Amino acid sequence: MVREPVAEIAGLFDVYQSGVVFHCLCAVTRLGVPDRLGEDPRPVSEVAAAVDADVDALRRVLRLLAGHQLVEFDPGTDRVSLTGRGMLLRRDHPLSLAATFATLGVSDVAHRTADALRTGRAAAPVALGTDFWSFLAARPDRQAVFSRAMAEQARLLSLPCVDLVDWPAEGVVVDLGGGTGALLAAVLDTAPGLRGVLVDQPQVLDRSRAAVAERGLADRCEVRAGDLFDPAPVGDVYVLSRVLHDWDDEAVVRILSAAAADAPAGARLVVFEDVLPEDGSASAAQAWADIAMMLLYEGARERTAEQYRTLLDRAGWQLTETVPGPPGMHVIDAVRRPG
Ligand SMILES: C[S@@+](CC[C@H](N)C(=O)[O-])C[C@H]1O[C@@H](n2cnc3c(N)ncnc32)[C@H](O)[C@@H]1O
Figure 1 (cartoon, rainbow, N blue to C red):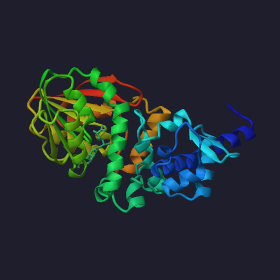
Figure 2: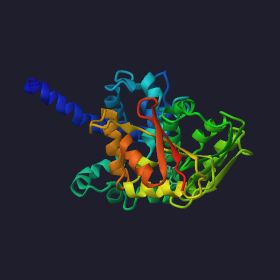
Figure 3: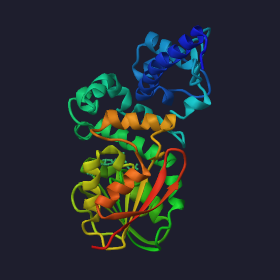
Figure 4: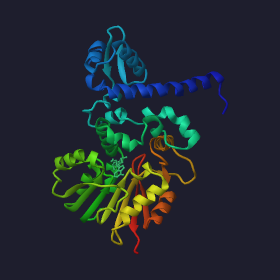
């Protein structure tokens, strides 16, 4: 379809400008600006003082965000308030996405996309000087925000899928790379006879232990430091939620093989990941997620069900079923092949 050049130029500039809007939104959320705002208009100078920002710079950024329905800004009174959309960036909102926007991530590494395009390699090591996981391990403040972001996203993506899975009434569920434990806690809630083991990197486990204790599950759930590439604890059901898309194919086979190492024949593996269409297409959100993976982690990507089937097969698992969840998420069920 041919459109008027002027319309094409406007469309191009929309894209051009939305990049800056994204960075501004990440920056104000990182500074905690939404936490200082509510429905009642507040002087910009007060907000700037509260978050230690330059008042003129903050006013101009808020004026930009007002054009995107995130805040309401009245230049006459120099006061600002949050819209319903902006409220989602407050940390105390029940559906908060504050950490998702505040975390170190695409906003920080995307400026090296041209390098990634030339080399086919992740942008994070170029932008951060080290791989993403090592960067987080060395920066507890960033790790804490990342963990909160994962919990926010689990609430939207993995938790709604818990009811799609036929969990057993008893046995051990091993959640590998389980993060803050929100998903494993929800799984254990499905049956009092289930016990859990959460495995993750040592630097995330304080938060996982606290989350498990808060849910009253401490006596049914062990939280254990471990590596995805080492043989997993023995269990009846293994869970990998939003872990495999962080890794290249060879690493995925190693992770799946480590899960299979001591798993009894017939053990189940439940993978929570989005699944791309088989024809090479992707929705806009899927294409975005795929690029985010490409930029953040070496060799990481979104995959089709057939690609997961092949990788599972190489590691001794047989894919049995793929069930769609909410947009952006599927449940892939697999079983440990005998031998
Ligand atoms: C994208 S997060 C997903 C967290 C959680 N499963 C969820 O769905 O919210 C990936 C998780 O893998 C963990 N991880 C990364 N590398 C790891 C490794 N080598 N060994 C164990 N866990 C690792 C991270 O700490 C993080 O918790």
